[in-house]
Length: 165
Picture 1: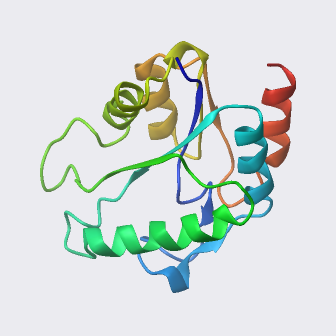
Picture 2: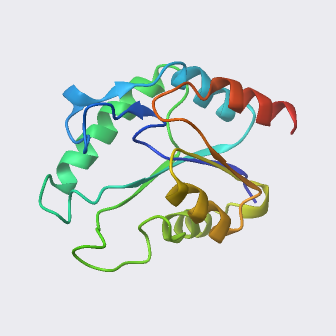
Picture 3: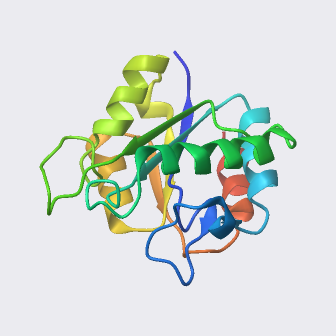
């Protein structure tokens, strides 16, 4: 079985400062050192899995195509650093529109990734910037979930986690 790092998108991979929804590549600004942090995770042998709520789709603010185009832009950039995600899961639902099992704090995206990619959850980690992220990681039975400050570097945290492995 594989080990993985589950990473939230807005606020962790990219800055969401000044935006409620990031749905255009023009608004997608990578957080400091994210390329180095993600590359270190991959070099250590972990899978990288992006998990992100994209409730603006359900609310009609933007489309799934918009989400996919932003992810394509993100992946193309990260590939240059061997830091791209092995899989991307997003929840297009919003609780104000319809119920689902995938929107964080529910663990649906994590559980689907574990099933799809043969991930051993008790040896995997999550890094997120909201209590919803942490709750999803705990509900999925991850080894540890880390809450970070929005729009900051996660490099030192990643280095600390990997040094304990």
